[in-house]
Image 1 (tube, rainbow, N blue to C red):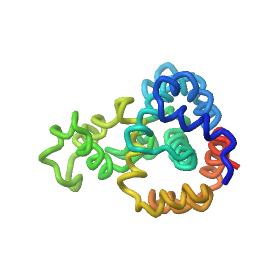
Image 2: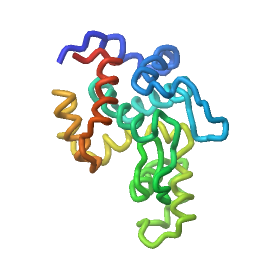
Image 3: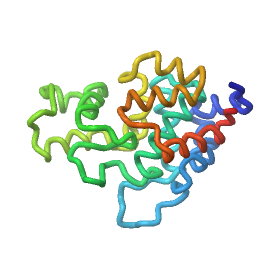
Length: 206
């Protein structure tokens, strides 16, 4: 793989000061619908300008510096959240499912337990089995503030997928993306591939 813009883009997402200035157009290219939030009643929507610094912070927090990995993670989050319009599952409205990564309740419990500032609020919960819808949604609410919402993708890749998935992504983003989607538990669809293709273009991956 040749990374025509990698020397520029890695610092973009690894350095927050630079990211706030330069990551926005990258996110907009991957998720065109994130240029603005048009529905004032949707309080979950975030624009690329709002999301980009938190995405950059998440990449840094979980040690993702490969442009291939960044492209894959952002494309997945953008697809799952409908260009960052939602952070809770809308169809069918599954209790507990959410974040930009649209994680199932069991993963959101794991994620919450990994975050120092919120893990105390789930310390006595070992499984989501049998929990009420309200409790599932409470757990989800712990990981959907912007700081955690946009770091959910990086968290999932680095903690829930085998290291071989990351190695495949670094070696070949297309083959690695298939392995990544296998880890997520979904098929590689034309819609998901379209997001990845935009991400490859945004990051200068050839």
